[in-house]
Length: 119
Image 1 (tube, one colour):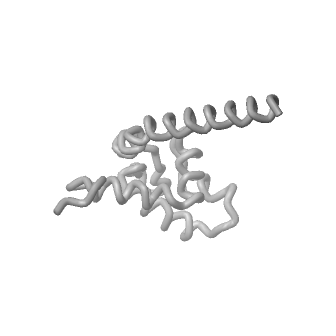
Image 2 (cartoon, rainbow, N blue to C red; image 1 turned 135 degrees about the vertical axis):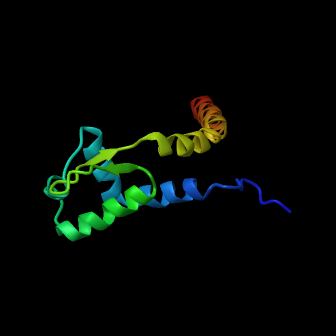
């Protein structure tokens, strides 16, 4: 029996969502969206050590969300948004559900509003 919503071969999707689950990693991606940066440049706004930032970068790199340069002294990190495409596609499947839910809520609120005005 196949699980509902289970996608075979979605290990990369799982890895992307796991990497995006951490707010520090999301902040790092936001920083890298502005351009490549070294570990020290990425660590600057955070109250954490350079090795701690390096661990976050390794998680992002394993998920394919960043690439690292080959400049041995600097090893700049760059964002790679391609793996997010699969995550966005998966989330898009729920857009109609949320739109429908919001439409139902709007209808209920209108009904309650009219009921209050009528009393």
